[in-house]
Image 1 (cartoon, rainbow, N blue to C red):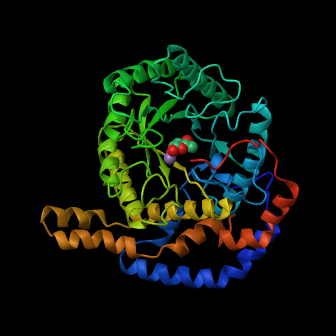
Image 2: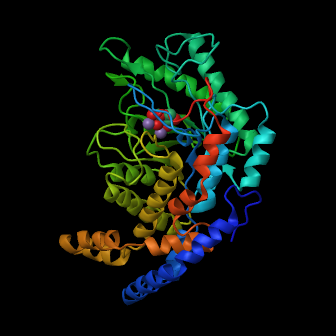
Image 3: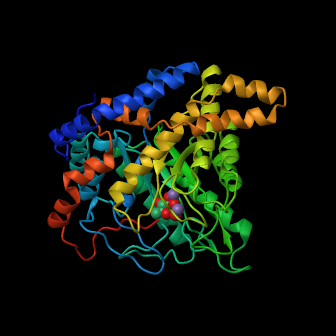
Length: 438
Ligand code: RM4
Ligand code: MN
Ligand code: MN
């Protein structure tokens, strides 16, 4: 069990919660273990594997989100990066699946990174990729991003955007991050507004400067997105452009796949397979969507797609192992919560992503290969379905309990009264640091 120096939720409460659940969990675990044993699968191996899973939490997800129309504030929302960290600590304490936080600057900027790091250490949290923000103007900023940032026509706006990214790297270094994620909203709303090729050339020039500022052990992740805020042509709209840019920049540049950033029905698992094949899969922003960049909870709309993504990741990991190469994509959530408690949504999503990870490990890869080779299409498809249909909840719960988390994170969280106490301690404050906007 990993000990957390300063747990936010009373550990006795978690222990009592687990004690109440223990008999049921044990019975479910034994039943599942028996069923898996008949398939030749050792449940203990899967539980140990589940315990290795980690997905980072986006600091901005801790606040309530909004749409273009309105934002309905939640109770006890975090008002600064320290309060966001406290919420992220709750998420990890109960799920034991989210040991790192992804920060967004300047929303999360602090003049005291050492204090932030110390508090994070106490919570048992580290820092994953830092995110830059040149998709909105900040107060007092010299040059507007209204017409673009890294690809802007204005050299001054471009230089300012480059410098902001370099500042993010410097702050991230003080916190122990090892990657910068760059997503820009740059693009055009009208045909003719931008020279399509010229915009990408300017973007690449800017990115070369940012790449040049990366420490030796850092990566830069390029995040593509089909549309919004640019509605006619986005500079980094798809994985092809992202791949070309990452290739152009060099080995430290990789592609980041945000599940919501594709047209409906896009075969995202194939994008994952392609990027993995060519060594450019940097990481993920997990979320789910029905129509566009909806930022709904992971696995809430299309859990089969999430499973298929992890199926490709399991295949890539197996290939990397036999080729003795590294394969370590960064897993992060990127969601916006409008009608749920963000802590509950982030905990549930972390568990859903972990579920897909464990289900993908259940795929009988030798059988699948044999069915593929003999063109037994039906059985090949059924091999995937068999893994996907297996309810691995008891494995996930057991892995959590063994690591010191809660058998049922949402139930334990509700019984802790954390949200009520946050609402008392954090009266709404005008101009609070942004969160929840994705
Ligand atoms: C974007 C994109 C980025 C995130 C912002 C807040 O749509 O998904 O990853 O940083 O939203
Ligand atoms: Mn994203
Ligand atoms: Mn997004």
